[in-house]
Image (cartoon, rainbow, N blue to C red):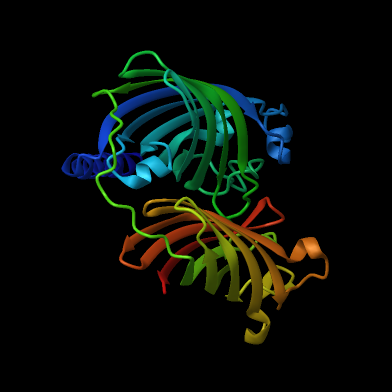
Length: 373
C-alpha cells in the first residue's frame, strides 16, 4: 500500500503540473510543515485504557506539499483572493505507536487568504485524503484500540494560519490545525482519532507569484441551482460481539435547490429519499436480521450550504428524518453531511461525503454522482 499510494501521488503531481503549465494559470511551490500537539480524549483508548495504561496525550507530524498558486488570470482567482491548491503527504507519530502504528496520509489541499496585505496574510486551508499504515483493532493482538478499526482511514484537516512574506519567493507560515481520522463505519471499532496542534512551515515558490488582471469575462451568475444526485455507501454492524460480520448498504436519492448569491457561496434546501439496510435491524444473539424493505425507507429534509471554488465545492448539510426513523428524540433524528464535490463535465459532478449522526459518529461514507438541471 505504501508503494502504490506513493506512485499514485507522483502521478497526480505530474498530471497537476502538466495541466498548470499548459494553462499558465498558476505558479509552482513546495512547502514543509511540522507540528507538535495534543490528542483529544474522545474515546477510552486514548484516555488510558490501553496496553500501557497511560493516556495518549501527544503526537508529532510532518507534511511535504507540492502546490500551485493562482495568478489572477481568471475571475474566480480574484473572487477567492488568489487561492492555492495541491497535494501533500503527512507522516504522524503518536506516543503509543506500538498500538496505533505509523500512519501516513496522502491528501488534496485547498486554501487562500481571507485577509491579505502587502507583507502578510491570514489564511484558511482544508485537506481531504486517505491514510494508511495504521495498526488497527484486533481481538487477539491489539484488543484495546477501539479508535481505529481498519488499515485505511479517511483524513480530514482544517488549518488557520498567519503567512509572512519573507521575499517574493519565500513565506513563513505559523498557525493551528485540527485533524480527524476515521473510516466512516466501514469497519468497527471506529471511535476515530481527533487532534489539535500548532504548526510552522516554510513555502518556496519557484517563480515569484504574480497578480494579473483576469483575462476572461465573468459569466452572469444563475439565480438558483437545482441538483439531482444518487449516492451509495456501505457500513458494518457494531451492535454484536462479532463486529464486521454483517454489512449494510445505503442508497440515497437527493433533490437540492440552492440559491446563488455570489460566485463563492450557495445555500438552500434538499430532500433525501433513502434505502438504509441498517434501519430497524433485529438482533438475535450474535445474528442480525434486516428489517422488511418498507422499514428501510427513510425520508429527510436538509438545510444545505456550499463553498464553491471554480469546479470544486465543499458541501455541508444538516438533515432531519421526516419519516422512517427509529428514534423519537429530536437529536436522534438529525443527521449531517460533509464532503467534496468536483464538477467534471458540463452539468455533471462527482462527490464523496461523510454522513454522520450526533455531529460526531460517522454513519456512512457516500460516493455520489449528480447533475445540475
